[in-house]
Image 1 (cartoon, helix red, strand yellow):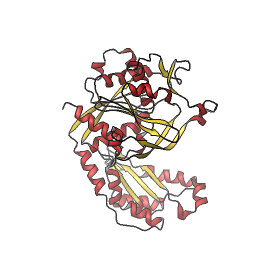
Image 2 (spheres, rainbow, N blue to C red):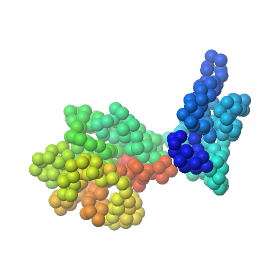
Image 3 (tube, one colour):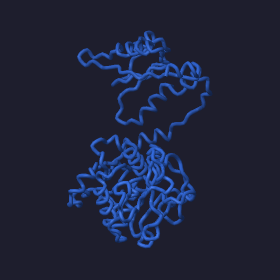
Image 4 (cartoon, rainbow, N blue to C red):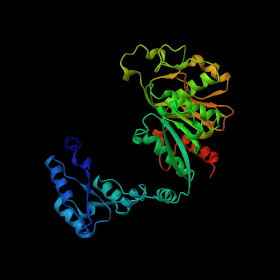
Length: 378
C-alpha cells in the first residue's frame, strides 16, 4: 500500500485507518492508547492515515477526538465515529452525518454534489420494522461455516427486505440429509428451498433429495450453479427414467452424463483454464418465469463454473416438462431451467448473488422470496 501510494501520488491515494477505542467499564472511560499505538506502527511502515474511523460502543467527545487528532497528525474532523448499531445499514448514514463523504471528495479535489440518501433511510426503517418471518432451507455441505454461503444468505435477506419479511435460514447439511428419510420433519417449517453452488461429489445425493422434495411437494425452489445441474439430474432420473443420470464431475463413466464438460474443454489439462468466468449474455424466452422476473429479453450474468448442461438431453427433458428459459446463444449453453406444473421452480447456471444489493435485490431472489411468502402459513 505504501508503494502504491508513492506510484500513484499522494493526491490520488487516501488511507483510512479503522481502530478500536475500547470502553473500560470499571472506570467508565474510552481509551485512545490502542489507536495512538496502532498509528505509530503504521508510520513505521511508511503509512500516515488521512482518516481514522473509531470503533466504539459510543460516540467520542470533542476532547477525545482532539487528542487522537493531535497525536495522529490529522484534522479533528477526520476522526470519524463508528459506534455499535443494531442495524448495519445505519453505518453509512452515521458516516454521512459526519460529512465523511464530503471530506473524502475534498481530499481528492473532486466536486461535492448534493446527496440524497432517502432510499437508504427507507431501507433502514424497513429493516428495523420487519414483523413477519419466513424460513428458507439452504441445503449445502459447508453449512457449519455460514460464511461459505455469505453472498447467498445476504441476497436472501435483500429479497426479504423488498418483500417485508425477515429471513430465517435453516442450514441443512446435505450429507446428513442423505441418511435422513423423514424429510417432512426436516422441511416442516420451510417456505422455500435453495440449493446453492459448490464443487465435488460429497453430499450430492442429499441435495438431490431436497430437490425431489421441493419438486414433488410444490415448494418454491431456487437452484444456483451446481443447484441447477442437480435439478437437471434429479429430473432426468425421477421423471425421465434415466436412472444412471449424473455429472462427469462425480462419475466419469456414468451412462447418461446430463452434465458434462464441453468438447473444447476436455483437451485442457490445466483446471483453471476450463472455468467459465465473468459476465456472459443470456437470452430469455418470453412467457417464462425468468422473463417475468427480469422483464427483458437479453440479460448478462456472472459465472464461475466448469461443467455445463449436456445438450444431447435437452429434447428428452423438454418432452417431460422441463423449460429451458435462458440460453447463451453464442455457445448454445443452457443458463436457466424451469418446470411446468410447479408454482415456482427455477434454477440458473450463473451466480445471481453476485449482483444482488440491499436496495435492489436480484430478480431471481426477489421472485423466490415473494413466492415463498405466498407459500408460508403465518
